[in-house]
Image (cartoon, rainbow, N blue to C red; front, side):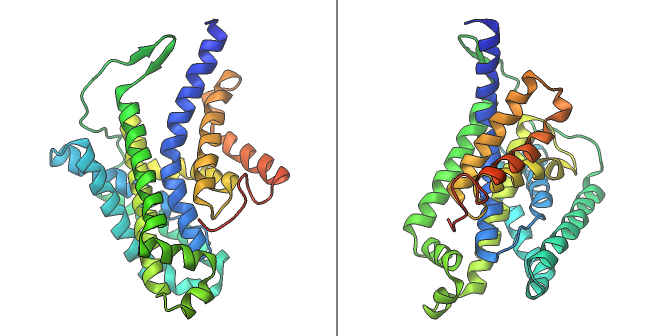
Length: 291
């Protein structure tokens, strides 16, 4: 394979893997938006909380990666329920803009709590050192494949939960038509707590997956939130399949931009993707729809 084509192929593979991981927190963001009707930017701090919860489980308690990932999901999900109940819920009556701004303030507060507890230094997980696998001209890290598998399993389980369980169908009903769901006797408060637990849990899981591929610090979620938001908007805010498509689009786009731009400009791809897609398709690639 010619060197230029080999480089493109490598970047596409990297982009697909990064996009699959990005899809996990993007699904959390779009699920919360579909039910509660506001973009919860506190997802950034919950991604950081999940990353550090997984760090404590993996490094301090000596647990393997898979149980640590579960700890990341549970910790971020529980904090998500508590923070929404006591901080964001009182703002909802004031409208989605006020609530979204409050979520930004919340994420700054939670990030500083993480900073107070763990400091500012970079931290890494306790992972075995393994050589990359080569498939022709393509290099793939074993940890990357494990992260990819975890992300795919998490998404499959979520889709199955929404499609085949009574609780999942109740979540979809509230997202589609809250008034009709209330008439049918569905408890909207219980659904909102559940969607916060699942959505922020996915954010925490995604935060740890990002950290497994790099390192973590109190700004782990903050650095990723633009790409996460771009993925949700590009795919169609409120659409879970759209979040997956948007994440893959942003992930591959961020990698391919390295052919022409410095890595310092990768974050600009998220902005450009939002502007381009919303200019051509204001509702996103798959259109804004609930689940």
